[in-house]
Image (tube, rainbow, N blue to C red):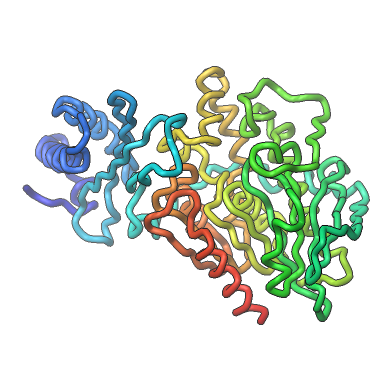
Length: 434
């Protein structure tokens, strides 16, 4: 069976007689599919149908192909991709994973297998950015409006029985001047001013109690935790309401489509503005070294980290873990996992609003913020992560504008590196600030 390099393959399928190249490509794809899906109840006809559908999508260069079979209660995803010509002969690599329906999954279940691109392709995966022409003007106007309100940052001491960490209940003015809650923690033994780690929380969680945030002050850093407006009832409690001026358009339950028909009313406009103001609140504290600010968070918190990194260019360090809110369209095309699936459900109901939805999301895409960021960055990705697929993380990483490193966790899903990644972050900051 003949092998084509990318350049030869693209040339071959664009001739007036591309049959030979396409036949070879179909055979390679079917062979790989049979091998990847042999333990599932997938017929030869299913494989042939998928191969034909895939071929219909392969004419543009460097296209990523995605298809799905449904067999009983299982979902089988398979993705094929052409390699860059710099990597040698062109070929198809096929990956599949079995995912039981969401309500049947348990913590004891065997992890999904690889379903996204292989690591060598991820390292160079840099898709075109979908960016509106007025992206910068939109955010400049948004932040200017927020700064018309006094920051009014308050740090009120609270007693939660801690002896080596001092805790403060934080309130500051976020989007629209609305009060945003948080915690501010300091090591009791300290020499001010201290570098400060600002942390943003994952989807559905709130600020909880100070006793849940002891890592960074124990390591000698100041630490500000921002509560996420409207959230904090999914897995850790929160205390900040989302006050929506003028209400919102209809939305799928959750936050991903709240106000999504207009960038001005979209939920994450308020959240990202709050997050920038959280940096300003931390810098307002007399014991914080304003030039040594690190921002971090996992999942949604990682996406917020990228947004702040792009909107506040004087940040020193950004550490987004398995970041959410990146390359939305690809995320929902290759995974049906929540919360991205909220967008899918909304578009299913609002068939005539799809382009409007994705235009709004382009103002809030971590890939676009990453391109504007300059802070020294440490990313992480789980290569089996079906909630924040690794290709969406690498899309942001490869567009990132500042010095950067990434830690990949080969056999991990959305938990990423867990405690191992936490140690990587501590070592990363220690290497920079001692």
